[in-house]
Length: 522
Image (tube, rainbow, N blue to C red; front, side):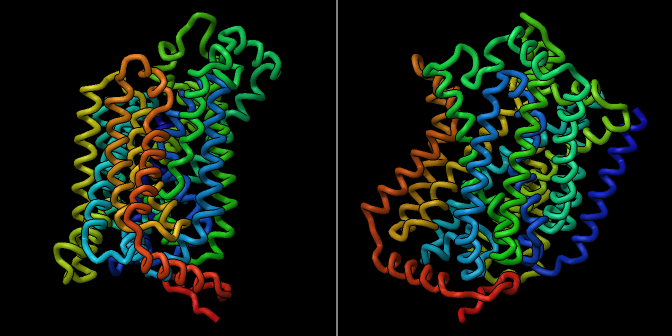
């Protein structure tokens, strides 16, 4: 047990040092919210992907691999496609536009893109974002408590509070820069541990043929990419639900904030390969850990959630204890905490920045100075963290059968459905309007709740919507509503102005733009 605590103490120590170093560079609101737009591609890519993955990857996806077997690899396919579209297709244009608009947040970009003359778009965006971010953060804090309970036999509440205090401390001190730097460190730890475990476990086991035969004996559905029962309408919905999880990368503010903060468009060209490789290796390894754990720890007739915990989310701790000596187990505790805290820190800074910059400083008190705004942002960060802790504890009491996988997915889906369709349309459709953007946001926000609490309770179709989950129907509905409203109430002046902006951005540029400023057109 000493080895575990020593490794965790060292891990927390690194986070505190990085937070302290980042705090020394915070001089204004731009530094606190986007790190002064000085991120290099390694930090930006690792930070974006570590933020997008979270405890959902290490505890949720590993558990899903143990529950359903080979069909869980569809999650990896969906994530890789989503990340590829985000970084290869959307990121270059988004970066050029946000630099041109001098945006500090995704909401800044939206207001500038639609030349908004009212505060409606800004207010709705900020409130919607903070609502689902609060759910997402609470899911991560919930996972912190579960991780400490699984690895160290701590009380759930103690683990949740300790995780909350550590993240809140370095976020309040160092803001976005602390979140980005710690994400880089935590993403590296997470990736190393994920890739290492299945490789070591594989070589310690029998041949691949024996593993395949063993899984097939436990449940033939484990070795089918269609899942249990083979091809069917239900398996199609299950695969679709897992594969479309990658939609959440197509404009989620917590991911695209890294594209605003990256130093230049050239850095995106380098970072996209890092992001893609990170996603593939991390996702493939996580599912493989779950599958190997199912082979090792269950037998014919045994229910995986009985042996490996609710949703089989204890499969990672079990695999680590089985494969490695105690001091390495401590490294894996740090890896799980890294996955959780990288996401919590990024979401906290983003939500606090949105409330402070997008709502208070822009709507309520436009005369707020930079230093005062940064100070207020720290206080809002603490308040948001405390609210998320309270929500996590409440959910743990009211829903003891919850799984980390689907708890996180609800928050992820809400953010994605509210913002991603709107971001996609705003980047690639010149006819898209402010009214369409507002309608799309409201549609995605409301459909996420309807899908979760209404469609998934309907008799006759309930199981299909449960399999599909909330993101696909919510995303599609928001996309269609935004498109329809923009067609019904067009804005030709806005369309001409956006086309003109795109033409100017397409002109030849220098190699490395100044951080946070538009490139000079030659």
